[in-house]
Amino acid sequence: MIRISNKKFEELVAEAIAAVPAPYSGGLQNVAFIVEDQPSAVQSKRLKLSCNALLFGLYEGVPLPRRNGATKLLPDKITLFKRPLCLVSNDESELRKNIHHTVWHEVAHYYGLDHKRIHELEHR
Image 1 (tube, rainbow, N blue to C red):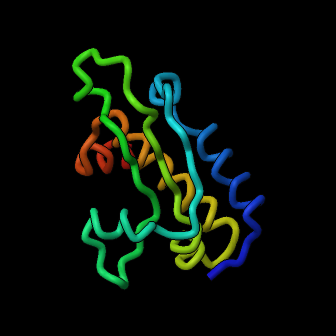
Image 2: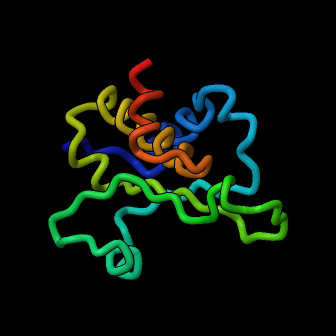
C-alpha cells in the first residue's frame, strides 16, 4: 500500500484525465471528476458491494448513447476512490498506472461502452 498526499493524488488524477486517448478526450462535456477516500454508504448499498469489495472508480450519469438528444441533464460524475487505489499500489508508478486505467474505464462508461468493448480497446 502506498501513502500519498491528497494533493499528489489529485495531480495524478489530472494527469490521467489529460491522457484520455482521442477521440474520447474530445467529447467529454459536463463531466465532474471527483476524488473520495472510498465509496459512500449510499453508493455501496446501491451497487450491493460486499464489505471487502474494492471499488476504484464509479461513473454516475446517463451514458451518451442513452440520452436520445436530451441536453438538459445534470452533470455526469466520475469518482475515483483514493483508498482502494492506494491499497493495491506498491509505489507511485503503479498508482499512476492504476489511476490511468480507472479514469479510462470510467470515461468509457460515459461513452456507453460495456466491459467487453473496454477490454478490447485496452488490448489494441
